[in-house]
Image (tube, rainbow, N blue to C red):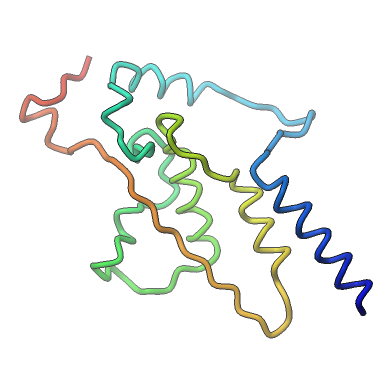
Length: 146
């Protein structure tokens, strides 16, 4: 039993050490067309204006983080694993400048899988501050769309 615990602890420590590093496999096809297009659209913005490092309009909207603001109950308090993953993906793709570091979503998901045990409830949460472009910025003259 002690040997199994030692092996499990060693495996977890190795996983946590390498959790911040993600290298796509050699067979992965990476298509940068979307990111290049978004960089062209948002390239004129001043990076220092995005103080949180996350610009929601810059990312891919898998789930709307504005819905889960912690103060207004829109539909329910149930956030299943898929919704949680989609929220994390939305925030991960919203990284606008290099002021924030986040784990790659596949590493984040694998940490849940490693921690799963019988009769154990794993609790996790997302607490992020992010910036968004004001929806009326174009009409009130604070943003010019070129």
